[in-house]
Length: 276
Image 1 (cartoon, rainbow, N blue to C red):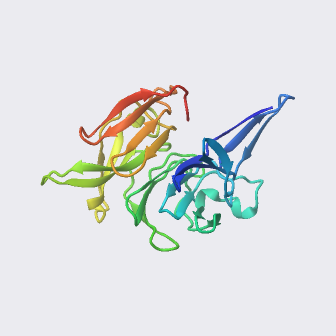
Image 2 (tube, one colour):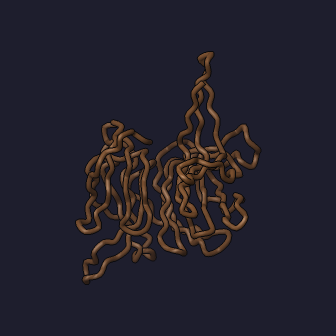
Image 3 (cartoon, one colour):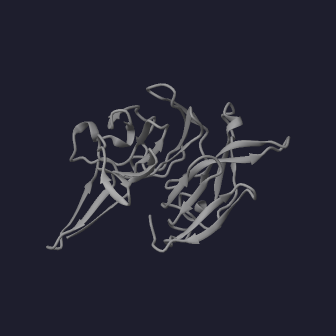
């Protein structure tokens, strides 16, 4: 029989590529088809995948972010109703892996159901989240800035984006100031949604955090639509969009990178295999 795991989450934790959860799809020899939500984690060491700590709850379409050298935060995602009752609302829950003890523990509840959402680290004290789907798989555009300095985390809701952007990418970039020669930090949400929305981006200037009206503005366009792909958003001005579907629904295998010097997104080389 053949099986494949998809819709998991991945990150670089303790300088090791780590993947967790996902949906295992399995075709059996008697032509039956089975799916299972996973809580397994694996890390890459010496070119071999090795089993790591398990999630408390099986999750798929979840997201993760490395908070610091000791903490990996996993949040949201679809549940497995065959698991324990505490895991039936994974779209509203989150858990943290502590390097010190090597185990996942449940942590802050999320302010809204989150599936196929995007998360980016702003700095050592704050994380940005933009929602993807809600529990009814409707695309929504709620955004939050999370203060991670307290154990329970403090969620502050930002103004809504102008478009629903499920399956988007997000990151932190610098934007030239309109009043002086300095650069300002901005959150960027790239692509997501369907059709022409997946060609566009939106910006939120972090200097406007106190402004709760009309804070999102149009960002640089993408060279093609991007939704339901992979991404790299390590640090500032390091946002790479990988594969995904374009505005016509075609599965792509090229990469798109933000160029901090031109302030635009540019197409990079193509992958030898398509990944989503």
